[in-house]
Length: 412
Image (cartoon, rainbow, N blue to C red):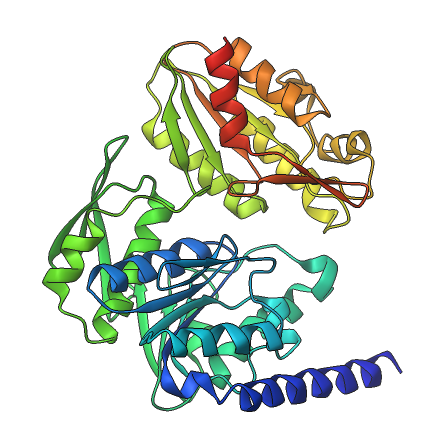
């Protein structure tokens, strides 16, 4: 009975999406749209592509977790991928404003609910696949299939670009109609292969198929985002010398390894990492730029009413990779933050537990991290990134991690 209800719902969503596209004049047929799917890196990859194409002088649109943009004009973003009616309207506005290109994040929820049915994609990008959204999909196989569904819907005329360093990348390219291309830093990458030449606090030095790139972005995970963007730009037929000039000037999107140096010489990093894989990667990126004598002080939590299985995993990652870990609230929603923190501490050894301080109020946790950090230390505040609110008991309160840290240091 449950399966039947889901099939009916899925067909309903697909019909709704097709009707919405038709109502708004099939805007996707008048744009070159590239979708980005995967667990991590979607926002950065889509945003970098938007900035590159705008920097090349084209009119372009962006649909992302952080913001929706129509050639520079902001529109509110409430979901990674909007509902089908809102999405059709956004694309129609892009056409009306003269946009030629659009870059968008395609979430697993959107694929499961057929929100992008009827969209004519010029290309698709797969970044990676790790543990996330199992509260919704119920199994990792269902989660993978939702991502794969996007690649299967790409037409013959489009490109399908996958990170084959990820264990699921090759599978994404199998049995699809679109032209398959691979990217990565290992030997599996047949089409676009990268090499990291320099990785420090000043940025990245990269080699992409023999072309040297200097980037202001930090961390190995961003090397993957940059390689995806470089590869897609070439597949779209852009002048790569011009792409290189634009790419080398780009700064990270808001809340994605956002950072500033405090007056006392503490590097503060704010990032959206809210999955086990993303958290582990961001710790790795922090370690890559940390002075040998400095400590890593982390501040993070786990969202309420979302996949509880990842709480103990993330708690263990944070306690293992931090010198000092402050467990706090994220968006607790309807749950008690203290209960979430207790679940984060489930798998900690006594040695790990000694490094952990529990502070349910996020503002207090931030102030405490500022108080104990010394010159050469790095504070990593993870989980919320670009978000400017906290959701507690059905109410969204204004809260911005970067804003809170800057305020804390101005008052110190």
